[in-house]
Length: 313
Length: 277
Image (cartoon, rainbow over all chains, first blue to last red):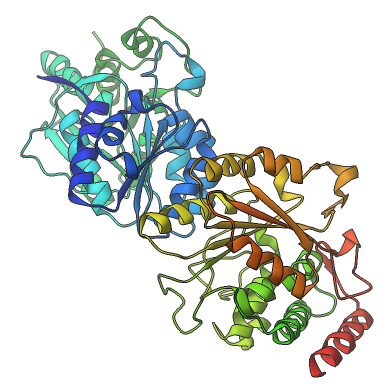
């Protein structure tokens, strides 16, 4: 599988959108060389707003731009895009249902060196709980490109969480992306693994590990966390012995909440692989962190064996 | 220079005051003090200064009015209804379930409202974004934004102040309702936001001051600001909290207070008698 950077894909797609629609404008909180909004700045300097290190103002300012018919994309690290600007997103954007796109970059544990201040274990939970807000998490660069386009085409506020890490492609160029749909990327008959972001590729690895143990796993990318087609989630879980969720996020309020809520009447056993209510920390690389927080393919496979009632052997 | 019918605006200001008092009614809590302090400025804007069309609230070339101190929604509702954006019959439904008149301004509910405000400190940023968008489109519209002198304790106000001067948003006119009282008492005592002129100048704004409860002075000051180009402008409007109702003037209890039945009748006599003149 080809490994690509999602931020790079996002930044390049913003330029394409800029070419196609003069109303697309971009705001940046002095992190353009990380969020990759720098490409848009180079291409369209008059439609690019450097807002300084002032995320609250950036977010409300974007609301004002949307009120004049622009399609603003705000950019910062997820910790600040979602965390610092929560109240501005809530009151100024989601309450009036404005057409603002908020991109939380270097999300999850992916900003491994900077540590807990710059890592987000809770951004999805905060954003999902705000009415009117669409919440998306791409699993690879290919999906990031389609998702960025879908965000621009969708009328209303959207939060997209983008990892800093390069990720292997888990989707194909010809695959569709429609907001709200979960996508099965590998079929199986014993258990279903619902995953998001960086954990989708790890879920595919887990499925290989499980094959060796005689367990067949279906893998589903739930890149639309809100809205999400709950009937489709139930259908994907139907007939399975168990369900596993896998996310680089707290088990509170993210994918685990989406899936357990959607499947609440099915009686299916669910195991959740995620961060257990703790902050991140600095580490030498992301893989070390993911292992520390129990977010590896082995952890997913063990959860699958447990939920399917098979011994770990 | 724009022509203004000063008498018309003065009458409108008194009509707004009566609308505010009537909306709240006796023995009910409402943000009377801050609504009354800014009533003359709001009247000056809606009844003379601003280009707007109550029959076409989304006219692209209109001037915008953003009430960053959203808790005084009463004064904006009073003005919008008085202009004809909606019927005064809505006043009786203020803050009741399903009403178009919510506790704070809501663009989804009320014709003529330009931004959702209430969590303080955000309106000026929204005004600046709007102003930037209007400039990109080559429109001549101005964006007026009323902020409170207590509200400017919010750090986001100063983020917006920097952004406005960085982007030379000379189509933004902030109006600071300088009534000297925050919810719990005098600003100098509770949480001092002074000095004002020096702060705004240091942030790159053109600063003007006026008697905010004198319609002629307000209109003159707003006209003067039209001539200033290349930087955002702020009009520090020196006002009296509760202006127009002697029992409420300079009384922090009327930040969000209720009138007795007797006070309500006093208000009716003062405001309706003046409106009839």
